[in-house]
Image 1 (cartoon, rainbow, N blue to C red):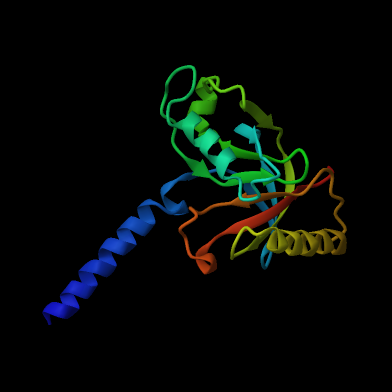
Image 2 (image 1 turned 60 degrees about the vertical axis):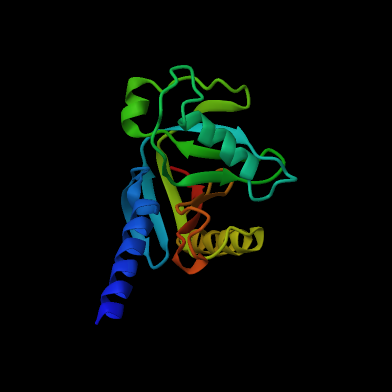
Length: 191
């Protein structure tokens, strides 16, 4: 009986720790769901304030970019203000790739502090309609490419027109097992 209680205690601790440090413990970018079709969605996003940095093509996982953004929210900003982590982390790929954190709504409304680093910029993403495809697993480029292809086919099949480049969104910390991760590929739609 003691062994069973010990196992249950360990499981309870793991659940609490996982919850605290998973996507469920963070504010997420708000949107209105317009349509859902299995793993595909059409969403209406409001304007989002982002803190962004360029990704290095020699660093496909974006570790350097992530740490620059993390330092910004950990007080490396003009106000030396600690800013809460949010989800998702947005990424664009290619020669001009970038990684972006969503600035929490309350911080954005009050005016997000300027970054101290010249490699980090405050940007905004204008409101608009977006198509999204949700999948689990790693953030490897092969998986993202397959997800982009599925989303492109679905957008065409539904009669929508995309405008702009595809981008990715990751919701979970790197230690989350692949089968539990929430990843997305998104593209803006024409009005």
